[in-house]
Structure formats: C-alpha cells, structure tokens
Image 1 (spheres, rainbow, N blue to C red):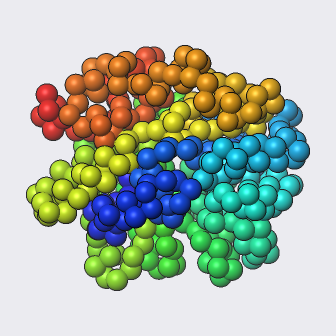
Image 2 (spheres, rainbow, N blue to C red; image 1 turned 90 degrees about the vertical axis):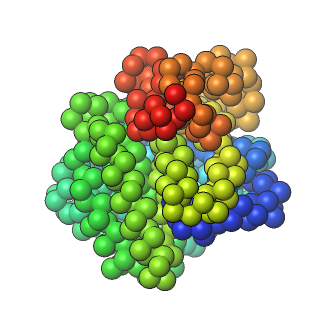
Length: 394
C-alpha cells in the first residue's frame, strides 16, 4: 500500500509515525503502514456468497448458498484471539460480507475488542438504514468497489445497475457519517476511466480512494492475457494518479489517495520527487523504508470462510493451517511451516531482477503470488514491475 497523498503531496512527515514509536496498537489508521512490529492486518472472508459476478473475483463467488463457513461462535473466537494477539485491523470481506446475517454483531465485537473494524463491499446493499447500523456497530471504514464509470463498472461487475447502486451506497455512508472510500482495480479494460473516477470523487465529496493493481488469482487468473497492463500503461496511470491527487490537494481538497498491490509504485514516486522536490524525496525515502514493501505472510494475513489461514487474500491455494484446529496466533507464529518461514526471509530466495534490485529494501520483492501466477515460480521476478533495468540499478 503506497500512500500517494501521504508521500507525493506531503500529508505525512517522517516524524509522524515516530511520535507513536511505530507500534501498531498506538498508530492512527493513516500511519499504520509505517508500523515496525508488523502485527498483521487480517482479512476475514466471512462468506463466499455475492450478489454480483465480478470478472476479477479472487474467490470465484456467486449468488448461491455455500456450506462450511465459520459459525458465529467460531468467528467470535477468532476475533477474540486476534484482539489478544494484537492485530490492529479486522477487515471483513467476502464474497459480499453484508450478505452474512450476523455481520453487524461481528463488527461490534471486533470494535469492542479494540480492533479497527473495516468492511470491503460492493456497496450495492448499503441503504441509509444499513449505513446507520454500520455506524452503530462501531465500524471505522467502509471501502466500496467501483471499477469504472457506469458502463465499464457494470460490465466488470456482471450486473446492470451495479454502478448506481454502489454510488447510492457511498452516498448513504456519507449522509450517515460513516467514513467511506472507493476501491478501483486497474486493468487494461478500465484504466481510461481513472480521470472520471477522480471527477466523481470531487463531485461527491468522497474522502478516500484506493487504486489496486490487478492480481491474477481466482477469476482474475483468466485476465492475464486480456486485461494485463503493459508497463508503459501502468507508468502513465500512476503518473495520472499522482497528478490528479496533487491537483486536488492544491485546490484544498485533501482526499486520501493510495495505490495497492504493486510496491513498484514506491520507488517510482521517489524517483519522480527526486526531479521535482529533492528535499521532500529524502523524507519519502525514509518513509518507504519504514513501510518495508510487500508484507504477505507478515503484516497482512487472511482467514477464509472455512477457517483456512493464507498469506494474503489472493493466495488461497496455500494454507498455513485452520483456525478450527489451532488459534490464528499459534498458526501465524509457527515458522516451521515452509512457505510462512520463507516469506519472512524472502530476500534469500528471490530470483532475477528482484534479487539484484537496489530498491529491494523498500519493495521486498513485491507480490509473490503474482510472480507465481505468471511464471509458476513463487520466487521469480515480479512480472508487473514497470521500472527499467537502469532504474533498478542493473
């Protein structure tokens, strides 16, 4: 997660996370990515069912009943263990998490235990009443997925009218005082809608947006050929995101803008600042070192609907164990599991450009599951790194 507004526009200074000793339990949410203890942010896929049919869905979700999901009692025990373990954020995801009947009780329990409760949703089910219930439950933030303007989004989502329903969900959250932001997955099919998304953010007064780089898992595996961005397309899109973010901030509209799932964006922002603002660039480099790059298996983890524990929400084909058999905290600290141990020492195993890259300390080898999806090798070089050999020091 690369904070474009934090780094490029200077809304966070190097000293800000240091004031809290960089402990995740003390850091406010906008500084959490700079924690040094790396207690995991945990994504819990509370259910697989979804009312949409998104082309890039990592969970292959459909609008059908699924069996084998964690019960309310099992989920409550998971939340209690995560809180005791020190996990700072509980991200409820799916499928569509708002289709789970006890979701408000689970959010309330997470908040009562001191975790920041976050929901990742397609937004189409959020009415004024649902938004009020989310607020009353103690929700910290709701991220609503909109992957383009109306026509593009509805094609992406597989359901006509999904855009208008999601936008109404955003408006309901804003009117009820629930912090809300957009989630946009960038592909070759929708990147030209990015300017329109910025226009929408400005028009609607939306305070936050995350632009996700596509990860080729689940139904997204079929998009490698058709929707994978070229390196030049990605560079132009990241440039555009920086420029539009800067324009918003210069106009006094301090929207929080982040890019997610491609840590190449970190050194890319730094190199651009070296040309534009060298003094600010030095500060940004220190913040990027604090961030530490990709943290699958360390700073982020995932619990699936059946209790399986994964390095992140995209890596469902590998499980470290199951919370029905062992506590998450025990699973997460048992580095005798081969992949978990290697992810925490990944620099030993990286190959190709990643192994030789001068930005390794601030990228950490980027997204291993994407390297595996493209090459079949977990430790192969990151296929969607868009920096040139010269830019990475070769």
